[in-house]
Each structure stands twice: as structure tokens, then as C-alpha cells.
Length: 291
Image (tube, one colour):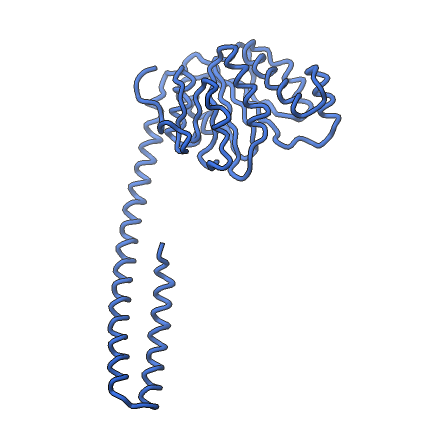
């Protein structure tokens, strides 16, 4: 994009230089031809300066109009979400799992409530637990697996899936004391759906693969509806979506935006597809027909 401010400053500098050049030229040569050339250059520069001013004013007007239109469009999308999801998850308890400290669950919580869902437990994984071998030894002993992060996270994924399927959170509460994750909320009956939110805008999310993939496979084996999503701030470079494509669930790469919120709800009702803004998406959101 042309930096108009820089061009304006450059033109002013050129005017000053030409003025000085005219004075020096008159003093040293006194030739009318030189003065005529200088005046022609000044005329052309004045024309360019005027055109730049006009272009800047036009661009400013266009940006103002487009900004106002974007604000209206965003507000319309936000206001339309409740009508598109209303009642679709009534009577369904939905649990949430996040694997990155860089994103939260607030947008998903909001749309689940708008859809009539009962919010179940929210498990927030710590992507960088203490580098203490005792943690892995203790977790391995509880889960009956080797004391390594890979083995522990795979077993933890299976336990999370089993707890959501049965409604028994006691095993997870015991593991929470090791600071591998935090639990907010509770579950008194089997969950009816799970939303996994992964990804980081600044780096790869290792837990998306270590825990997210085996969790989704566990949920699929238990026939528990699942959606794997990430925020729109996660670029294609760090996207976790390819990890979950082909697992038979809905993926959403913009769960923080209105379209992504709708896609998340529809994914929990049985729609399967890849939705969002990245090249991995097949469409922005599901076709608006009752699943």
C-alpha cells in the first residue's frame, strides 16, 4: 500500500530543493531555459501533490464507509447467532477441553448456552507442566502406564473420554491434584457432547496431538458427539485442524467468530464437516438446513 504521508513529505522536500536550485541557477547561470524547466517541474509536482491529496481523501472516505459497513455486518452476525442455534442443544450436557493457555472457552460457552445446552465440566490442560519426573511417575502410577508425557497424555485422554461417557469425574479429580489440568464445573450424568479447543497463535500446540487426537478417537468409539476447534487467531502455520480431519468429526477453525459458533453447535447435533476460514475448510459454515 502507498504511504501517502511519506509521499507528501517527500514532495515538500522536493519543492524546497527546487526552490534552492532555482536561486542557485539564477545566480550562477541566469539562463531563462533553466528557469523554464524548473517551473515546468514545479507545475508537474503541484499536479502530483494535488492528485495525492485527492486520492488520500477518497481512500479515507472509502475506509470510513467500509468500516461502518463491517461494524453493522459483525453486529448482524452476532445478533443472528441465537436464532440459528436456539433450542438445538436443549437437554444436552456439553463438556469442554482446552489444550492451550493462549485461547479460552468463553465464545463456545456463550453459544452453548444460547443453544440451550447444559454446560458440563471445562478441563483446561497445562501445556507446560512442571518439569518434574515425579509428576509423570505419579500420573503414570494412577493411570497404570509408563512415567512419560506421551504415555500419560494418551492414558489421560482415554480417562477423560471414559469420565465424560460415564458421568463419573472422580478419577479426573484425583489427577487434577498433579496440576496437569484444571477442572471447573461438574458432571452428574453422562455428557451428550464434547468440544475440544486447541491451537496457539504463536507456536505449535503439542497437546493437540498428544491428548487431543486420542481423546477424539475415544469419544468416537463411545459414539459421543465431538467438535475439534481453534480460534481464528491461529494461523495456517500453527493450525491443529489437519490433526482431526479424517476422524469423522466436525472441525471449526474460527470458534471465536459468529460463523464458527454456529458450526460448533451444528457439529454437536450430528453435522460432520470442516468449517471456517482456512484452506482446510470446505465451507464457512454448514448449509442452513435442519440436520
